[in-house]
Length: 89
Image (tube, rainbow, N blue to C red; front, side, top):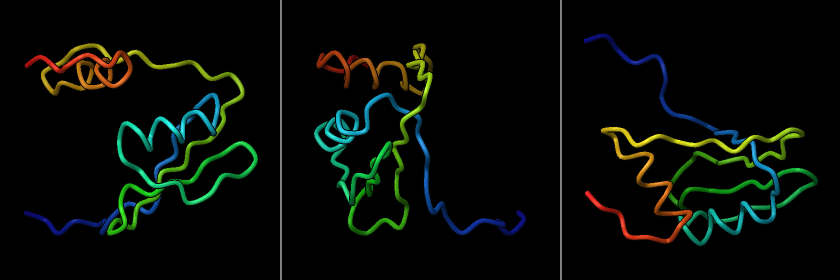
């Protein structure tokens, strides 16, 4: 196996519609911590031990994504988080 060329991810940028509402959702649903809000963005941390920050950036023409159900369960996970229904495996 070859040696990885990356050691980690410094930041993840996610386009969103409303930084304040999105930050609240990421805090409540995923347990992220808000580091700060600035005009058009919210910067969050996954957890205290993570070096990765999540930047929720207001997109001018934001189009929400619809994740289909798949064998990874991504669609089921996000439907659960949005609709507050239990995840069914």
